[in-house]
Length: 425
Image (cartoon, rainbow, N blue to C red; front, side, top):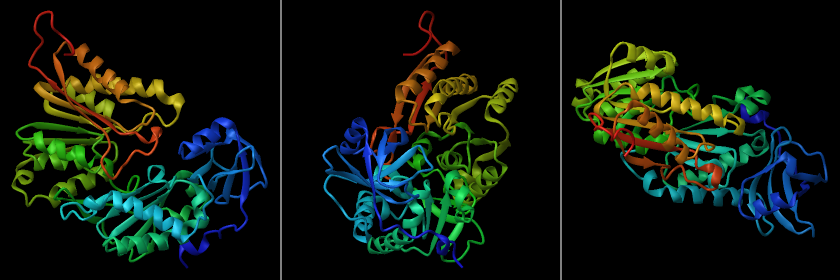
């Protein structure tokens, strides 16, 4: 029996909801979330996945979404404006719009790994779809999707086929909340054969293995694809340090770009195992074959200190940490962590070296990341220039303010500061 057979059925009865005036304004402006404290009344207690219809004070339809009584995000909005049925036609329109936005990428022969549906930003909050060649990985972030999952998957496969995508396998992944009620959904192969080894896909002409069943997130951090290609463009002849390297996306691109050596650092031994395999997978490229690749398993902060004590220097240092600010209360500690990472990592940058740091937290702004990086640069007494700043790729669109999570800054170090001219420039 498939895990999909264990999913609850959709409830035909809709839930009538009244929300606070501020939440109503946000709904009409297109915000995808209604929080628990904004709920003023409901017609029924409601179960996860019930369709919740939001009415204004005059009992006019304002919008409709998925009810999630076990989450602070009580309603994940699907539609606002005039009344609309949530049926196969509705899901098809949502998915078609997402695929159309990515049409150029979908038909690229050099890239077969991409995000097809980006949750809230594609008006399907809490639902993402990543493509790895002929495998789709569907991640569910809310149990409100469970009663609708069978219907949505059927529509998804149909629309992908119509868009020219050949799909042989579908894997479901689940957030912690969803795993608590349906643990078997995480890593379930609901279409096709169980992969006997990691799936292979292409990213800008390079090959990568991805563990779609047990890998972090959906197996690969697709959102950094453009930044990895950028690193490839300026890695030639450089000694590269890749911190929080995961499965080696930046490392392999640096090697393909002509780096003389790459050191990949991560706490996960399984991720670094795939990083080594990904490097070998591209060894047919002479630049990759000639690159000296090493790995270090350990805590990033501790490894940076150890490398500094060992006198190591690198011409390109890449720092791509996980989100340190899952909640608003985490922001101060997150900013301190970014600054601490920059302090430690910049001590390893050689003269005329490059330093790249990313943040994947929507709660940290580009201005705050820039300030942390430049303050750390000032503390070195060396002269730096901002080379570039970067945001989201086309397959990770921004549909609302909190959807803008990925920020990356690249700075270039000068050999030394002139007298009286130390610090940022």
